[in-house]
Amino acid sequence: GQQVMQIPQYQHVQEGEDFTTYCNSSTTLSNIQWYKQRPGGHPVFLIQLVKSGEVKKQKRLTFQFGEAKKNSSLHITATQTTDVGTYFCAGPTPGSARQLTFGSGTQLTVLP
Amino acid sequence: GAVVSQHPSRVICKSGTSVKIECRSLDFQATTMFWYRQFPKKSLMLMATSNEGSKATYEQGVEKDKFLINHASLTLSTLTVTSAHPEDSSFYICSANIAGGFYEQYFGPGTRLTVT
View 1 (cartoon, chains in turn cyan, brown):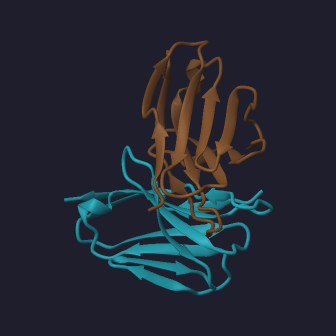
View 2 (cartoon, rainbow over the protein chains, first blue to last red; view 1 turned 90 degrees about the vertical axis):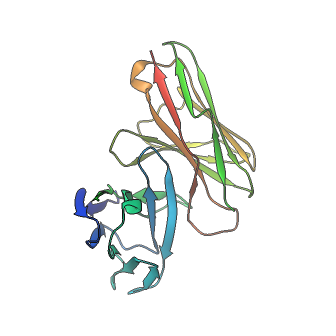
View 3 (cartoon, one colour; view 1 turned 120 degrees about the vertical axis):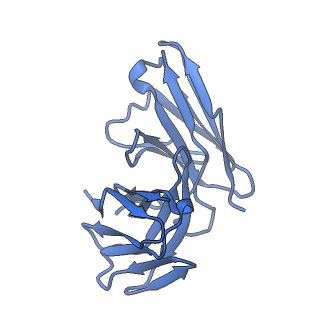
């Protein structure tokens, strides 16, 4: 079945440093989504990328969808303590109408 | 917009009892809702897909007779954990798609179930 892997699993950064998480799918994706889950909270939808090579920005967050539509990245510039949480990528599950396969997640800790 | 509520947020029950968890889309209609289980520091594990007016579709390994799902309306899905055991203790989260929208899912705040 489809696998969606993320690296790294954990990342500790000093506040102000940059952070990047990478997402790789075993299958080509029609779109890729990113979610953020704060500690003790629930996943919150951040963004969806659809086009090959697409790049989208949300303030300090930059999302990229690979040319082959099998990988994606999320880059945070100058991290802040509010960025703490686990970041998940997710892609449509093959053969399903609306199911998503979530990546393993990257847990970000920002040290003040 | 796109707010999903879940109730209760926390529940403690005794082994052998049943617990019902409600998931509601507050400001949109959801033809499809999803139920996930999440273990500490782990990713989301899809348990079942709940379709309004039809039977839920369960993922492999999920017992449909133990985890009863009902999607009675476009804004409400319920998950009932029957004859709960301590190993059912977990964080259960529901999510919903907006009818006619794209694939993104909007999650409820989750329910922490502890079975003693």
